[in-house]
Amino acid sequence: MAASLWFRGAAFSRRYWSRRLQPPATNLAAVCSRSMASKTPVGFIGLGNMGNPMAKNLTKHGYPLIIYDVFPDACKEFQDLGEQVVSSPADVAERADRIITMLPTSINAVEAYTGTNGILKKVKKGSLLIDSSTIDPAVSKELAKEVEKMGAVFMDAPVSGGVGAARSGNLTFMVGGVEDEFAAAQELLGCMGSNVVYCGAVGTGQAAKICNNMLLAISMIGTAEAMNLGIRLGLDPKLLAKILNMSSGRCWSSDTYNPVPGVMDGVPSANNYQGGFGTTLMAKDLGLAQDSATSTKSPILLGSLAHQIYRMMCAKGYSKKDFSSVFQFLREEETF
Image (cartoon, rainbow, N blue to C red; front, side, top):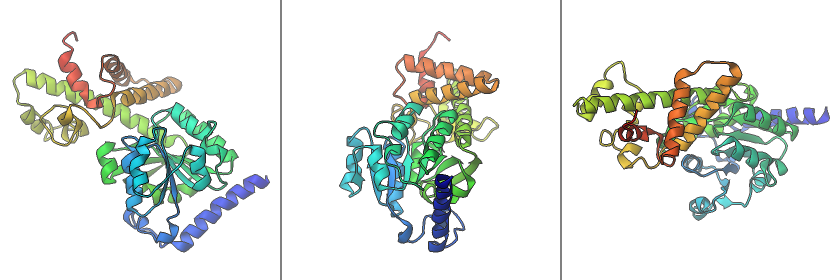
């Protein structure tokens, strides 16, 4: 009971002083313009394709970072900029009471939080831990329970928008957790994204992300199939894309992230499908959708087919390419 009271008291204290020290926020830009007095060091764990630009946007808004990545080379750029680099997630937790994790899989997230040198080994009471990884909602819920035992707060906040949005600070964050802590999370997330949406209890952020990525995979495959068919029927790919994007078939995969080389600049299809969101990660997310569909007895006929296609791509050498390489896969696979 005493620990529970302390936890609630610490959470109230953090919110109280945050409100006393900072002016009311009218929008996300205002949230990020708060006085330097509030900008104590933030821990950041996971500096991959998404984590790297996200961390950079925090530094642009004046937040000192305490960082860790399993690959030391990923930290060098930040170390050269004067940010603190430590040797484990536990060391991050020892030095920061606000931590963001951005990791590839559920296994990586569990290890970062509960492993031998995990965050929970040295986490401080009242700390705010935000996981922006895309993982199983059930894993998020279990992590939240373990974090709460330590007197800290856990929120799941997966992202959408891809590497481009991560670089420009225009990500969408889907946040699950205690609603009273949302404002504290928004202060940080608003520096990395233009949309920060509260979804409900822990795990609902992950649920929203899984649904979004299942739809994204389906629409990317559909766009790739339509473009491939049109090209084989003699249409110029740029013309076809223009028609699709002024018609009812328009979608993000066609107008912002077109999978056909030469149609758009600045997207992975214009760079031999390098960078962006990897096929392996899309297959992983579709697996999470499949698991969730099974547990809730929800039919996902197209989602299941998309999962099979991306798994097949991984087995045929596309695992390290962007998920839009499904167009190349369809072009090369004449046996369908």
